Image (tube, rainbow, N blue to C red; front, side):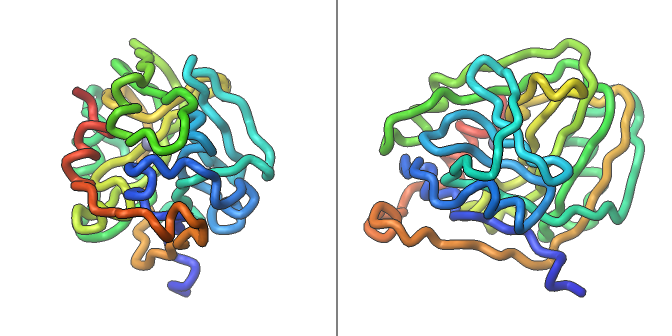
Length: 234
Ligand SMILES: [Zn+2]
């Protein structure tokens, strides 16, 4: 039934670009909509990784800890993940390149889970922020972490470019290592061995926050240009 085959967004990402970091949903709300995904936390307090129905917070030292259902988020995206295809790629393949080679169409949403060993992995996390600091400013203060060799899980989404105001376009993946102790938002890396599981998502459910900040925000930023600064390796 396709009703279950949907991505869930707790808010459009352009609200985050505008510095709206107030939590508008709880982790419990998010986990009710899906068991795999990513996001951030209230006050932009680190990176969220959702895996197997549990949620972790990666702080700005790159340390991961599991959070309970009461933690709040201004932006998260999850899906009820069921792998439809599982593929291996040649050792040394770039992560984005590997996904690009496996998705049948760039115009569909896909949930992605990669279990494996990685090299040259670079991830980042963000420090807690005052509200209304535009995300593009915050990104200048992000902490990056390099893992020459590591093992763990990447999870997230491929989002069509035309959804760039509501979700991060292209590949958006968060990493959690096997020990569940380190992680972050993926900037770059290669797969040395592993399996890429994909699920296509022909529907998108999105909540629109009923907060004064959201209802009165002027959401006219150039989301695509700012995303390229914030979410990609430079
Ligand atoms: Zn991210």
